[in-house]
Image (cartoon, rainbow, N blue to C red):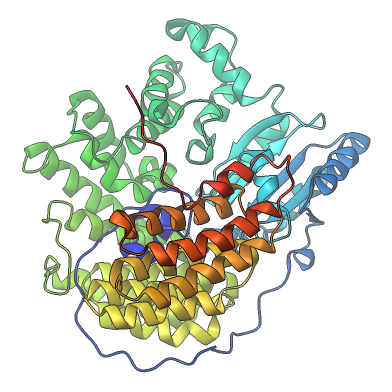
Length: 555
């Protein structure tokens, strides 16, 4: 499934919408004059609540709630499934539209205790620290003793997800122990007692949401390659997935490392329709990452990979057995690969690379079809946001705006769409319109953690695009501090990072004391917020340091 902020969102507005990495694509879209938007569009009725989905979710917002769920699991001899998500996030909505409503998943849920942690519930960000989760969605599986068994990949197809879930529920030991054994003697790991299911547990672990529980982020590519090399000869599909994930995890700023053997394997997979279909989630979501990892710009290897990927992605796009989100992701990947070697440009005068007319026609047809046919509110939030991103990425910014505005009243979280509108406006150089959409997105955002996140985006945008407007910047920052003072977990996890981004932005803005009076007033307000925290709160120091430059390091 496509996860816009995790994959390649455009510009500042959406950089902070998820805790995973963003790859801004700052290229100009056709300039259009956006009509005035209503201050608060009337949203369509929200989709059915979790409680009505057929799954007996335990809503958790405190340690007591979680402890009660684990006590129930122990009494009933069941594992615990924890889903950490948010109302607005597109991939969360995709999971609801394609997984949580499936009868086989609902039936399977009766064999575990399902716990839902809404990131905007009171105390949820403290639970995020307990579970060591950050990005939405993250899905964890614990045994009845409270030991984390595995993290489940939300990007795989629903049918495969259920299989991986069952695999985790049947696992006799946590993935951490399996990994230790696999690495104990890399050359003989297959003969060291690991079963085929152990290898599948490693291959389908959610390395993207690991949060450095098993390995530091920088070490993921080497670790996955090491596991692939150690994988038994009869586990070809598992070894291939590990190699693809290793390539996908390579830092996109790292120089290409051509590997003839790895490229040959990849080309074989891409040419084999069933084989490529089995790894569709990795190939679509990370097409550009894999291509950059294996080939340099202008080389024959790059040309060969681009052609092979294009053929496979077109198959995915045409595959009606895939979800609309997966097919949209394949189309986005085609655009990303078509522009992979284009110069990085920014600003209203920057021209986007010209795409083939056939591809533009396809993009228009598929986005219009999705808008016309989708009836489920969850799916609409997931797919339309991706479609709007796709249109802008393809140089069709005016059409992206039109799609977003037409869906404001249909979305249960229209502020997410407003952030995309802000991003589009910034890309075409319309700072006034960009800031208007940012402000409206913040004004209409809902939920304590979400409001801090959207407010942080608004303050950041103001500092970047209207640094001379002290009054507006101070008003927005003061509003954030006022809201933070009302929240018991404002300095934890996502909320804490939102506030830290604001602090860093304001400190940079005040470099040289240019806005000292404003910072002094905000600091006074912040002192009151920090003073109200419990003296033993471990995040009190974070609060105190928010607007103060880090001390200089001495030799």
